[in-house]
Amino acid sequence: MNNAEFTRNTIEAVVRVGLLLLLAAWCFQIITPFIIPVVWGVVIAVAIYPIFLKLKSVLGERNKLSATVYTLLALALLITPTVMISNSLVDTASIITERYESGTLEIPPPNDNVKEWPFIGEQTHAVWLSASENLEATLQKYEAETKKVARAIVSGAAGAAGTILQFVLSIIISGVLVANAPGAYQATIKFFARLTNDDAGKAYADLTKATIRSVAQGVLGVALIQAALSALGMMVMDVPAWGLWTLVILVLAIAQLPPILVLGFVCAYVFSVAETTPAVIFLVYSLIVSGSDGFLKPLFLGRGMSTPMLVILLGAIGGMMMSGILGLFVGAIVLALGYELFIAWLNNEKIAVEQ
Image 1 (cartoon, rainbow, N blue to C red):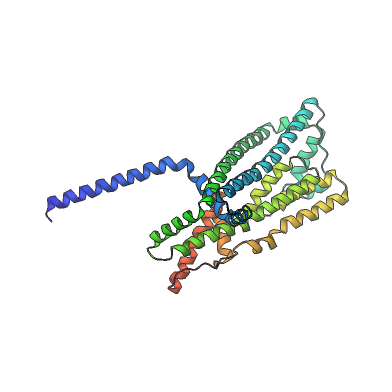
Image 2 (image 1 turned 90 degrees about the vertical axis):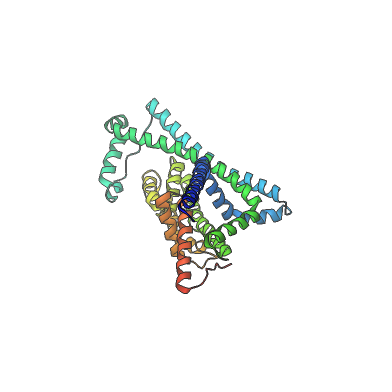
């Protein structure tokens, strides 16, 4: 091959590669707004598929009808609690605003036990006592902090609304995916086979599927259970803005932090306004709810997998720290795949997933 021919082939190869990269970048830019809803749709579809199969069996193996019913039920399960929590927040805000404007808003004085709270007890007691004696003067004194909190609440509410709309789209996508699950599964196997250049594509696909279901059950599932039980207890005790505290507890539980961090302050409030007996019962109930992950997590996390539970948990937590809630699944999948590849390399064998 002479120099002229080599130069021509090189230029042609560079042009082709450049056009391919340009096309790939263009396609990526077009689909960027849909990446997160689609990924969430895949996660939801994989996590919910065993339940979908049972629903499909009940409905006489009618695939499209089952997918439609599943989608409607999932949307109802998403929207109904959202509306309940929103109504709780709106009602609480309306009552507070109405009483404040009419001058009838009263804050009960703090219990002396508040002073014993670690780190913030003295300051919290002083601010609380000041607000109970003269709320308007206290708000004026802390005007800057109050405005900052108000802006944070408005921003959080807007972000939550956007997240709910995103999940609505993701649930619809998951409905389409479960209706075409066999084809999607085969495409996933081909994808992993092309990446690994061997016949272990099914093992990698099964590992990804098992990891998603493990995280959904062991992390999100347990967090939802703890948040729901906390909400039930706060509703019974008529705690103001219980919906807001439920959201905070849910975030804490997903981040693997104990709900007692919030329920402890709620218990302190209950002790200051309620009778001793129901307050003690609520405290015991809160401790049980907060510690429930100790026996719930081993029941759900890592089921059906050879990968150790600790690897899945570390991947979920690390992924969430990097990429938010979606990172729970992505981080767990990546670390599980990395762990299994490393073990397979050590043992000079291909990975396997327990069925």
